[in-house]
Length: 146
Image (cartoon, rainbow, N blue to C red; front, top):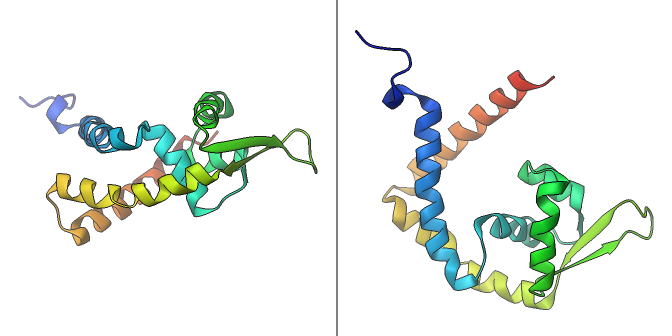
C-alpha cells in the first residue's frame, strides 16, 4: 500500500534536495570569487541596479533585514559595497557597489555558463523549469499570506 508520506513522492523533498545539489555547484564556482551564494545574490541585485535600500534588496531576495545585514557587513568589509544612511530618510540605508565590486562583476559573468554546464540541460529546458518554479513560488506565497 502506497503512503501519501512517501519521501520520494514529495515535491518539497525534490525541491529541497535539488537546492542542496545547486548549492554544491554554486559553492564550487563561487569559490574563485570568494563569495557565498547569498552574497552572490546580493551582488547580482546590485549589479542589476546600483544604490538600493536594504529593504529593496531584501524584497528582491525574500530576506528580512536581520538576515541581510550580516551579509552586507561582510561584503562591505571586503570592499565590494558601501552602506550609507539616506540623506532623505535616516531610517534607510543605501547600498552601493564599489569599484572593486564592479570589477568582480566581470569575473562573475562566467558563472551562469558554468552552472548551465553542471545541469547538463538545454537552455530551453532550464528557462521553462525556472518559469514553472516562479509560478509555483507565487502561488505558495499567495496561499501563505496572512
